[in-house]
Image 1 (cartoon, rainbow, N blue to C red):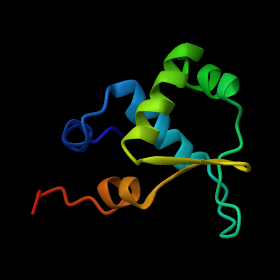
Image 2: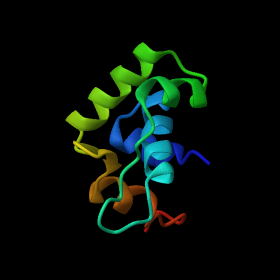
Image 3: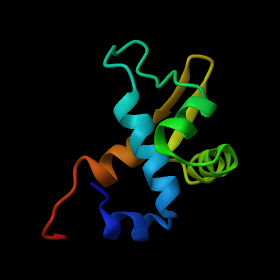
Length: 92
C-alpha cells in the first residue's frame, strides 16, 4: 500500500517510494544485520522497474536520509520508519 500523502510530504516519486518500501520489507529481521541484501538488478526485476530507475531512486532516497548503505546491504532509516510505519491515518 502506498501512502500517497506521506510520499508527497517526503517529496518522493512513486518509484522511489516503492524502492524504499521494498528495501524496508525485504530487510532481515535479525537485529544485528537488518539489511536488504537483494542486488540492485534483482530489486529492479522484482519491482518491474528499470535498473537506472532503481539506481536513481536509491540516490534520491539516500540524499533524503531515508535509506542507508552499508557493506551488508541497504536498510531504511528511522526517518522512513517514523513516516510510514508510525502513520496516523487521521493526520493528527
